Image (cartoon, rainbow, N blue to C red; front, side, top):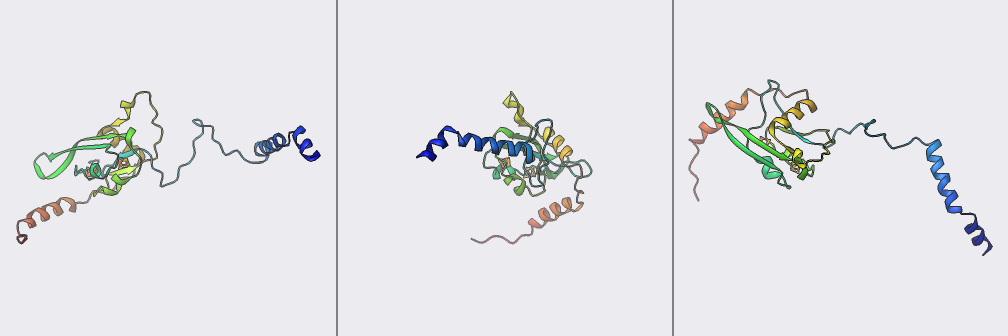
Length: 178
Ligand code: SF4
Ligand code: SF4
C-alpha cells in the first residue's frame, strides 16, 4: 500500500521515461536523419521509380510487346506499339505511359520484360502538388533510366537475326492437327 502510494507521488514512470530519453540522447547514436539535408544509403534491391533502359549505342531496349502492361496488377502501364520504319519485323513502343501514382512497386513488369528494358531505380522523391506530374512518358522514363543506370548493356547483333530466323522458319512449321 505504502509502496503504491510512494510510486504514485514520485511519478516513477515519468522518471523512467526521461531516463530512457536521456540515454538515447546522450549515450546512443541517433537513428534519425536530418532529411532532406541528409539522405540515407539505399540497399541494392531498393524499388524506387520504374525507369526505361537503353542499349550502349543509345537505342531504346523496349520492343513494344506490352507484356509489362499485361503483368501489371495496378494497370498503370499503357503501351502503344508500332513497326520500326522500313523494318516490319521490328517493333518499338511508339508511346509508353506510366502512372506512377498507381504503382505498388511490385516489379512484376520488370520480371515480365523479355528484353530487360525496365528497371526499378533508387529515385523516391516524387512528391508533387499536381498528380498529373506523376504520369510519365517514355522520354521521361528513359531520361531517368540514363541517370540511374549509366552503364548500359551491349546491344546483341543476334537480336534481329533471331527474329528473322523465327519468322522465316514459321512458314515451314508442320500443320497443327486437332
Ligand atoms: S512495379 Fe508493379 S505496379 Fe508498378 S508498374 Fe510495375 S507491375 Fe505495375
Ligand atoms: S518495356 Fe519490355 S515488356 Fe514492356 S513493352 Fe517494352 S519490351 Fe515489352
